[in-house]
Length: 251
Image (cartoon, rainbow, N blue to C red; front, top):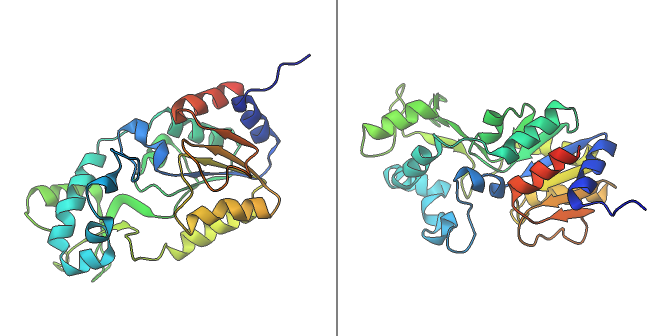
């Protein structure tokens, strides 16, 4: 008699069977790269500061210097972070043709550095900052240089207006094109694997419901409860690197 499949083997089997698999990731996949998530007790980014005061679009508009005094430190801390094995495993799934695309809530650009190619960054990316006055775009490396030589917000070198990180702040809508693409992928998917996300922040948290409602299967690889635990074919709740390493080994 064949032994009962482990969770990793089940996920590998679902991946092999799927024709239109997509991945959805959240902050938990980047924790092993040294980037704290937002809400974990004791370590979460919002434990010490109120996000509505420091990461809201109104805070940027009201006082860009104060906004950047918080955000600039976060920017600088992210520039040297590298993808971990979990990011690399998901890029390998795509390379093997097992998944169609990767949708991420993360702004840290680590999926891109890991080699993921069809990447939908629904919350934007720290890769660049933008000038809302003239439309100029500035690379993260240049923004970090500007922050190092000024005491306040980095300024556009074309028109002198304060730059804004090209990420979705509280109080802003998600980029229309990215959200539409993510929703279409979720609608078409016969399998969605959600990695490192509590699936609580909408509208992205509604994507698994679109897949599940259309008859697609769900897999969860994340620590802690999610609203979709009862709908998932498999839930792996160990360390994300360990779990994805095991899935890759089972393929």
